[in-house]
Image 1 (spheres, rainbow, N blue to C red):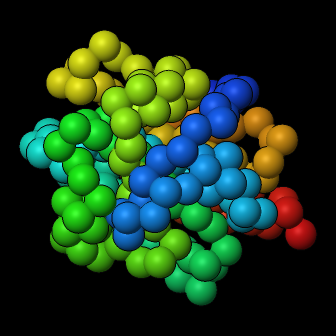
Image 2 (tube, helix red, strand yellow):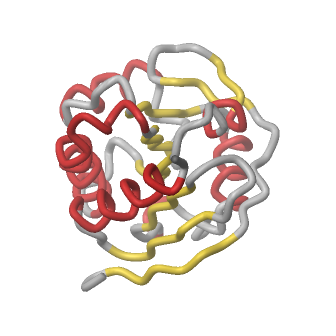
Length: 167
């Protein structure tokens, strides 16, 4: 990857509830463990720097996955839950033409911080966050951590390899 660093990591996904962009309260582990490979990033809707770039990359990723898009899950988790209501996330999702496989999540401040810390993505303040994406083939498998701005092509290649490895 040209502008990103790939590594693998273990993540102890916390047993917490988040609120999806459709207003439904859901279990984070259940959302991540529905049997499909998953990609996760951390954003906030009022961000004007890296979040729109990461969201545009996920939007392009949906297109690149083509017919395989329903075989993966994309999750964008807000790091600004005080501002990012489900309605605001739903509007943000529309702006980036998020399909049904790409959902946005908010929740309590505590839930947000717990999730960020579990993924080692917490940087002390939303204005200090860095671009990071996590990919995983299935529950119990190691996560691929991509620090920096991976392209949609690079993410698609990683995800399609994960899909293929599942048989």
